[in-house]
Image (tube, helix red, strand yellow):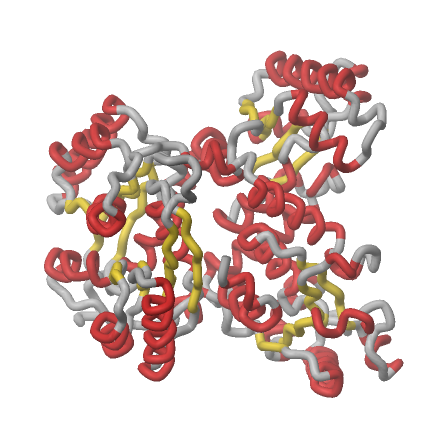
Length: 279
Length: 279
C-alpha cells in the first residue's frame, strides 16, 4: 500500500434496543480483521419505530456526507423496529440477531419470543445478585486488605505489586461472578522464605501473576518515578523471588505482560475453576 | 405448555480461538429469545486443528448421549481450525465471524487478515492503558475515599449507601475507560441541607443513582440485619432526602432498581459523556 495514503475509512453504527454493548464488542472483533480506519457510533435503547427513524436519518446523512455507505450492526429484537432500519437505511446492514434466530427457530421447532429488555429480568436474578456479591467480596479482599473469609474465595490471586492482580480480580467478579481475593507478595515475604501464613491453608485456590521486569519498571515508574520501588533492579529481584516462590510451592502462574485482562481471567478459570466454563 | 413437563433442554458450545467471551455474550442474547433450558460449555483458546478435533469429539459425544444435536456458536478466525469444526461436528453450527466477514470483504474490496490473538496487541495499546488507569482511579475514588483529583474524574456518581454506585463506577472504568468516582450521600449531608462542598465545583459531572426503598431495605438487611441503617423507615427517608437534593441541585439521576449495571452505565454515558458513544 502507498504509505503516503491513509487507509480508507468508514463509519460504523451499532444500533441496539439494549445497551448496544454486545453489538459493539462483537462488531469490533469482526472489524479488527480488516485494515481499515473506522469511526464508531453507538446508538443504544432504540426500542420504538420513532427512534429507529431518527437513527435511519443519521445513517443516511452520514452516507451522503461521506459518499460511502456506513456499516450498520444491529441487535434489534422487535420486528417493527428492525424493519424500519433494514428497509430505510442506506447502510450495509448486518442483522446479528435475525441471522441466527431463524435457523434456531427451525431447529427448536418454536418461534422466538422477540422480547426486548432482557436485562430487566436479569437485574433481579440469582446470577446477578451473585455477581454484585462477588464484586463486593473482591473489593474487600483487594490487595491483601483482609484475610477474613478467605475460605469463601473462589480464587486468590498472588503476585508482586502492579502485576495486574486488582483489575483481574474485579473482572473475574464482574464478568463471571467469581469471588476473587488478591494478595500482594512483598519483599518481606521473600526474606522470610516461606509462603504467607494466612494463605497457606488455601494454596490450592492460589493463582500467580508474574510480569516482565522491564514492563513492571515502566508501570511502577509512572506511579513513583525514580523510587527504589520502581527501579529496574528492584523489579528484577522481586519478580525473580516471586517466581521462585510460586515454583517452589507448586502454584500455577502466568505472565500478564502480553495478555489482556479477559485472557488472563479465562486462563485462570480454566485452571482453578474449570467448572465455571460449563453451567 | 404442560406444566408438569420441564421445558426441552439443549447443550450449547461456545468455541473460540480467543477467550470465547464474545461468542458467549452474543450467543446468550440470542438464546434468551427462546423458552428452552440450555447447558453451556465454553471452550476458549481453540487455535490449532488438534484442539479443534478434540472439541469436535466432545460435541459429537454430546450429540450421541443426548440424542439431539448441540448448538455450536463459533468465533474462529483461522480457516483451517474453522473447517475442522464445520466439517466434522454433528452440531448446528453458527459461524459468527464467517457469516459477517464475507459481505464486509466484498464491501471493503479487500480480504480479511484472519489474524488470531488480537488481544495480544490490545494489551499494550493506549486504549488498554487508559482502561487500567481508569480502574485504579475508580478504586481510589470509591465511596468518597478521596476528594483529591476529582477534577480528573469523567463522572462522579452520587447516591445513598448501597444504591449501586460502586459496581457501576467499576464497570464504567473497566468497559469504557471512564474515570468514575463515587460519593455516598449520608444523613449528615441531608441535615446540613446543602450539596457536599467537595463536590460543588463538579456538579456538572455528577450523576445520581436512586433505588426503590423496599429493595434498598432488602439489600442493606443482608449486610446488617435488624439495624437502624437497614430499617425500611430509614431507607425511605434517605431515598426521599437524596431525591429531593438531586432535584433541587438539578442533577440527572435514574433508579437502579430494575436495571443492570450495563444499562445504568450506558444511560450515564449518554447523559454525561455522549462523546464516549462515538469514537
